Length: 308
Image (tube, rainbow, N blue to C red; front, side):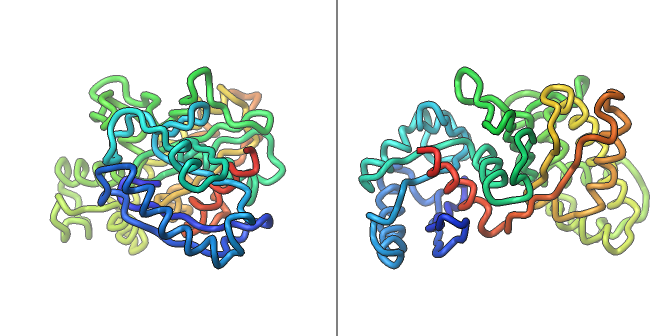
């Protein structure tokens, strides 16, 4: 579930997405009507898969999803405010068990079940999208903390003085620098404070996106490459701190920004290694997710159903 779209599907025991569809999240100001629309669309897929008796359960990945309670709590980018008992609404509607977690935690479970983290018991999933999400796996289990909201690494402070204002209300959060919107923000700042030639100057400053920065970097634009180096440096330094917390075997990257490949991976690895304690140097892998982006959200949510 995202603030704009919700994707859903049927996943078999081998991790194949056998059917999928989507609806617009933002079109529903009433969560009950939203559940009605999901039920109408998903029921069609369930019938083609052999009926509701074939379905083990429902897994949901949602912003501010609390695994302990099954509630979505105070999600700023969803149409419904306050606390929404979403897992219960889904379970009551479909008549089968439902589990819910934060979307990045769902991605971590999906990666451990179906992706590059198969067989790993300790890793961190970082989702680099509109924001920066994270899921922390220790000893094969998602870290939820005492209240269900552990692992908000996107809101670790990486700039103590004069940091960028974050949507969460804090300043200097990792998300404000390392997300897709953060990269676009870096581009605007650099273009406004320098006179360097750049292909990015052909685009109105207010319309710049992270994809524009990627496209320019691929054409050899030095300013665009500098932006990725800057972003990778901040991520790498943050990752070194994350390693000190949970000693993961790997940090797995997922989301739109990870498509930048070596442009982002090279500075991340260099700066992470530079800032690691000697006991971890050369021991922690940084990997790109193996899950297909189109299916990853569905796979991550479906993996929760095995825990019900």
